[in-house]
Amino acid sequence: MYRFLLTRQWVILTLVALLLIPTMIGLGLWQLHRHDHRQALNKVMNDSLAARPVPAESLTSVGGTVEHKDIYRRVTAKGRFDTAHELVVRRRTNADDEIGYHVLTPFLLDDGRTLLVDRGWIGSPDSQTAFPKIPAPASGETTVTGRLMQDQTTAASGIKNVKGLPDRQIMLINSRQVGALLRGTGDASAKDVLGGYIELTAPAPKGGSPELIPSPKEDTSWIGLGDINLPYAVQWWVFAAGVPFGWLVLVRREARERARRAAEDPSREPEPAAV
Image 1: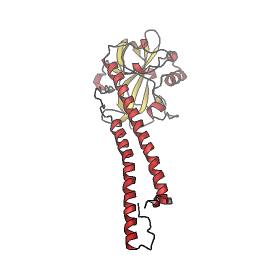
Image 2 (image 1 turned 90 degrees about the horizontal axis):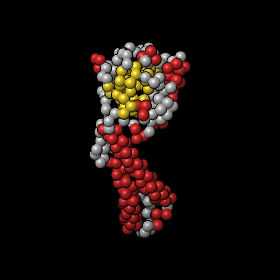
Image 3 (image 1 turned 60 degrees about the vertical axis):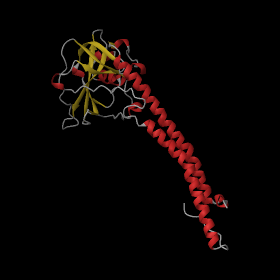
Image 4 (image 1 turned 30 degrees about the vertical axis):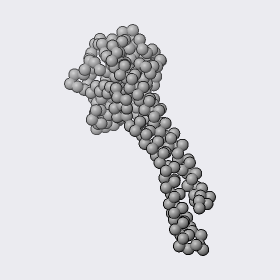
């Protein structure tokens, strides 16, 4: 009755079903891994935002990297802004999803080292090649507070590090690359650049520009705010469970169709039903 399972059509269909099951299970596990990673990041983020500020130089070093446990940690630094060597980071959005720039300003610490400070978002000018007009930060010696961030990379951000951009425009905030760029333009003060950078939270800019980068949402839920990975994982596993069920439905339908054709014409071998 079920000899049709040995036909070429059904062998191929069965093999496809057998391949789909582990593939879908694997996709579900991948989504679960992403969910777990998001939850771990949320914990680091929430712990960092709740901690008291510490000096930035205590968590990073010249040419060093910001540890994962320290990202979003509130830090302070004392020095002055070097607007003469200010850069802008292209294709960044604000809270309203408008495309513009992030303003990256070197901050010269009292000990001579340089900390990169992302002062926030400004809109794009009409010309994409001209350097935009940027409101000046606080002048003279200033104490800044911000969230410590790791250097951006293409692998982590998905942003392509395009070459040949207009002067003083970059795609990624990477302390090593920015330090080399500043030194290449004759900025002697960029000799010792601290790893990572900070997103400025204080002092607030006069007139509200550049727009400060909003604080990330705290997340204490078991799924996570905006976390679609766990539902996707469950969805893939439901699909995996549905494959053998669907295969059985098709087999039973084929068997019934063959039995009906055999009853109508016992002398003719029934053809496989469409699947």
